[in-house]
Amino acid sequence: MNGVQFGDKHSFTSYNLVLTSKNIPVPKAKTYLIKVPCSDGVLDLSTALTGGDMKYENREISLRFEPLVSWGQLEQLKSRLANELHGKLMRVVFDVDDSYFYYGRCHITKFNTDKYPAEIEITLDAEPYKYNIIKTILEQTVSGTGTIVVPDQKMKVVPVINVSADMELTHLGAMHQLYTGDNTVASVVLSSGDNNRLSFSGTGTVRITFRGGEL
Image: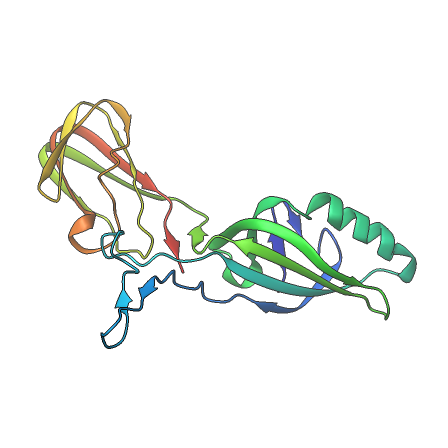
């Protein structure tokens, strides 16, 4: 089905809305350019304070629908959409890309009843990344030493590292003490390459959990 899931409501099965068009733009990169007098071009400081990482603006997703309801039911539908969606922060999932969800604030920006079927437009002020619906969980038994290499991904994440007994973690040459149970180490950031190599010393089970994201 080519529809949209708004939280626990589906555009077609919950509201009888047919999705006629959608626009999901690529998020705009946050750039910071300085014009330097007596110099060619500009000074690009876009990643100067982010360790080389490009940051992104929110993106506005536009959705257009036609309702499959009678003329007399339009005002009731309008009130229901306003009550349940308008101004709400929620997860939004597209049927054609249902491994990911977008997260943002919904707005009903158009409800035109001048013609039949009516025209409805809903926009989502969404965070730049779309997120994996299912969290990534990697588990390994360590006896002495062990290494887990996390698959590459676009969005940087700080994982939750659960250990069944106290252990030591080495990441990018730095050693961190892990204690039985869940551990979150702010400086252990996963994305790609060497960042994703985690080495453990100790005896027990290691479970790494995180939610990935893509543009």
